[in-house]
Image 1: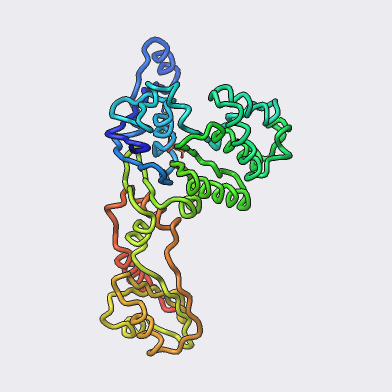
Image 2: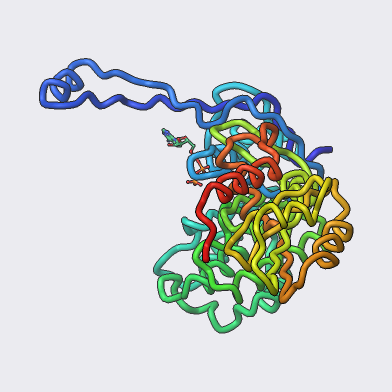
Length: 356
Ligand SMILES: Nc1ncnc2c1ncn2[C@@H]1O[C@H](COP(=O)(O)OP(=O)(O)OP(=O)(O)O)[C@@H](O)[C@H]1O
């Protein structure tokens, strides 16, 4: 059975229009006008059990709305949706026992009471047998080092401490699917790493399926083999993270610092017929973009063998840049070749006066 099975899922919100000015406000009083916002636009995807999948997109792309439908908080406008075989908004009572949810920006713990009391209340909500609860709580408390925090009220915890408690709260009933909406938001790198390690371990040992929403692509790199990317309510990419990186990074950039001044025509002479492109930073420094289809050592050898070199730096395109590029074009399909882009840069540089 699939953990998550979504077909043509859509969510539209009816939003009241506000007309401008006093007369507009008066008109609004007597006759309201509404407009439709399509937050999620006929998306289809499946997640097998035991997978950790990243769900990413710019602000307002529709991530939280999807998670809210998957967890039964919102009713879809149309489409089909099954989580562990249940229709979330219909089978809520049975369904909630199988899922854990963490909304990084909201707490499921009671603010003024001790953490342990919140956990005990959640045991009652989820109807967890006392022995199972105690066993699981002991393990989680030890693993996430919460021992000293259990009797403190939630309002007195730091953000990192609270987030570790939120995770425990979402896992006390041993769910097989966990939805994490920005679980590392605002945390320092130490706590982020602890949480990532814990999630990986839980996935490995217990086979827990995780759907993770985040703006921190290092969360995705550390945890997810697959990523679903959303733009304006539609899925624009669904596949492996490595595949996304190779398809989109297009190649590598080598920055050369030369021992003598180099003109753009001399640089181009060095690499001859190779399908690479140059960007000249100043008279002694230039960057060479080598697309994946060009042999990297051949390109490097052509330059090193033909000009005096002082220093070389090699840059891989990082995931943040790749994803930013996709967000900007709004599609993981339509893309301008990186080498074409860099050729344009060279043309612009050529037009500039040569630095002396
Ligand atoms: N209750 C609502 N009523 C009206 N519009 C809504 C409602 N909830 C969300 N929207 C709209 O739906 C769209 C998607 O919002 P959503 O919160 O799902 O995006 P998101 O990808 O989670 O963004 P963020 O990264 O900022 O949390 C936005 O245009 C938002 O304004």
